[in-house]
Image (tube, rainbow, N blue to C red):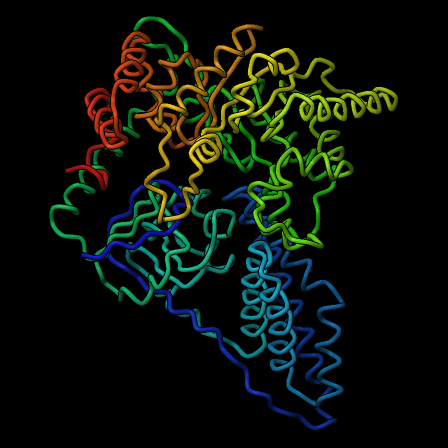
Length: 586
């Protein structure tokens, strides 16, 4: 048995046999033609380009219907590239100038563009490399013909392993035959994750040397929740995951009934359960899973999925779609959280040596006020159509919050002057993600309309632990006494002005941590849609008194291992389907 670790980008468990998609991108040899043949080669090229555009338009339409806007936008980008004379013109010129075949002109031109993208080093641009290769294969297929390949031959249900998946491949899969995806490349915002989430298929990406470790028919387990891939599992491990699948299947059957029930504890306290989303089309999943709204809409994908900065209309259309899909339920929009990523560092004249402690999140917005104002205008315009809340990320000082709110007020005044409708009383709140914000919660409560605790960064900055660093990841502990004390202070600070406080970090979606949060006084939890059913089952199975007792017990324990063991034992008794068959279940 071999265990590989990657990044889980679509939740769930897939158990089956491997199907390796060995997609070796072809190199076209350089062949020359006679001058008299150039006109015919140019005609061949133009015919292949037009046929490719027609295929892409049909694929975009089908993807829009089946998977939604976000997946379809990928093909809009493809259409834009193939329609751009600055890309296709040099291909025609190469035929006339170098007397080469149409297929070589296409291959060389797109390979040059792919190389240019790959040299930029930015994850957003590396994703575009796959777009270019996808286009290259499509046009070459229409020029010289190409058999459908092994993908079309997959007639049985299997777990697909690949170096990477192009958008066309991901969209073309028969979802009834794909149990899970595993790729060596990719990231949380890549194509594989987008399509896998839309199809609700488990997926793990960024899993090094995965295709080298398997062959067709190899038994495998893919855990999209933890990012774990288990190759040739032993009988005991296989039995555990089969049990997990069976229990999840039963859990799913009861989901529609559970979704209709109120999120109220056994002793009558309501705990709002909301969803964290990156794309508007995740909202139906939130509602199906029993969510009462969206507690965190991350807007960074609008930047990472395109080569150009999103316009005000791009922001507005995304926000308006969220409002419409929620049908009157609350929507909390976090302003862009950029600056600690390669997207912004690559564009900086002087990249920061430690961007996590640099010009990121609200600081980045305050340093790029034109960009900030565009997004704020769009959010406010969307607020005219349904309940919207504005939330600033990684606020560290009251002055910072006031500066951000001052800019928002200026944007409001501008919209009033232009007679543009918006919610005049839109709530404005902040993320509590650093110790300084928690320690000054009472002071912040004088200006903010609500708090939302982001435990991911709060734990990281409190314990000085990078959870993506395997050397120290075990030290990342949301139940650390210092973290719990900061959460307690945040809740107490909010209470002085009776403003609502929620948690939208990963701890909110973890049933083991959720009891702690409820015990500390939180009454709104926002998590990934897939986590909501288990959270609702937990909420309806416990009393607030039980949760408060869990907090007291944890405070008396003297090691992380003891805390983890205790939380697991308590929650396992209450909601066993959340644990049975998991990788840590013995």
